[in-house]
Image (cartoon, rainbow, N blue to C red; front, top):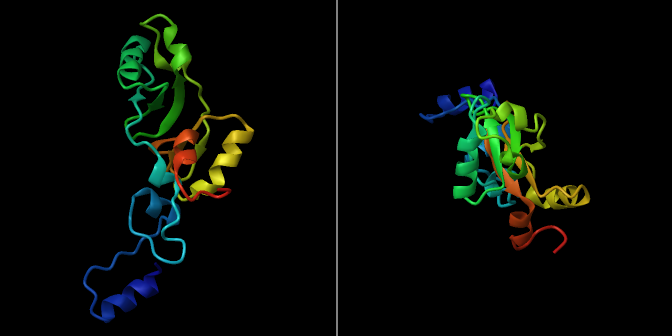
Length: 161
């Protein structure tokens, strides 16, 4: 909301007025309430699996391998201390020597999407390129979660149904 709108609400007696400047994508990413005619439209952030395993660049592949297998995942997201996405480690690359650092086996440029994108817009894009998953990040690159196309396809009421 603009500074003018925030100030006006305060003059009208509203006590908890927040001037949010980051934008709609970040608002949605934070899971804050939505209004309007598309408020109920499922977005990337609504479907993304937030429990996707993460790892650090210097972490040994052996430790990551165990974590990925224990959780029945096929990927691990390489992040920094602020959870900014740095890369993606595929399960098939975890067969290397256990002491190899994640940085040496990760894909350094994983596909990412913003949280405000309607999930009905996603499946065709992923299907055409035969991509089974995509990372969902804030505009600053902070990991929100992993979206699997299979999860989107199982949702009722999607575009094209």
